[in-house]
Length: 379
Image (cartoon, rainbow, N blue to C red):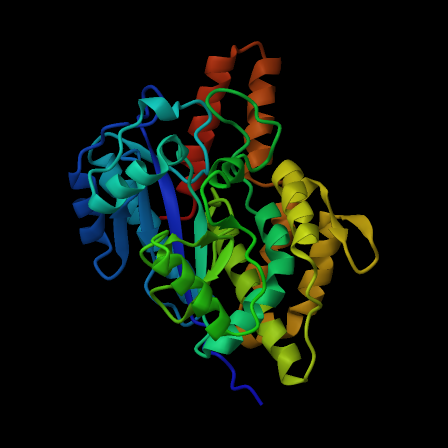
């Protein structure tokens, strides 16, 4: 019998730094912001991102979803207060509605300079933000086994988080435009399946020995074994504008992993579907978010996302109870009912246009909404 993993949680988020007067990105913010935010959250991580108009945070290791909420609240509050000292604001959104990537400045850091040299325009236009959720799975082979199975649910998690409907002042027609930008990088997207952790390590060493990458951190898959921690790292999701939404998704991912471990304990497992099928659901989630439909490959038909979510909540009910996160997981229903950040951004934009505003004013209204919703629940 496989011992129950710890299922501790860590959450990473990336934010945009905003000039509240122009509502454009703060392309050259003071470097003191990072130091100030770090002092406000001393036992957590506040780090630069590839572009200076971005900032990344990472929670401490959290034993429960409730602890993760407390930690992420502290981090968002630290960023809000630190940027406010410089007359700026922050927004948790995977793209800015109208900012142009060609006008942004890269962070002066050796790792980022190497990426810019190696990947050129593909990485220079990486004006996107995401959310990563780490869940501790101590056993390496179990980590790989659960990664193989949980791939099926990644499009469902993405659908709950979409926050990037605009790109450089244009309606993209997608709920998550972010992934179209990220997918231009090498070694991204849905990972293949592996028979063991050893097989995964052999692939990593092949890349390293060929001089393609220096280490496993350059594998930017939608989900991966972390190269730094004994965790499974979910990376497919957009960053959630509302903190409550982020916690719901982190809780649901953790419950899905526990559900799959529970099946394994009973000598059962989730069916491994071809990557091509999962990628199709990934596309549907990118296109329509939680308001659309995904394919239920068990019956071979598209099913409204809200119905699929109910099935997932039923599948993981026992696990939500065991992990003490029933309320957080149930919040996913609220997202499906009211829409994701992408839905709300589009609704605000269209409403302002219908009221007679021009596109520039409508975009500013979207940014104002993003700033307000990103700071909800911090006081």
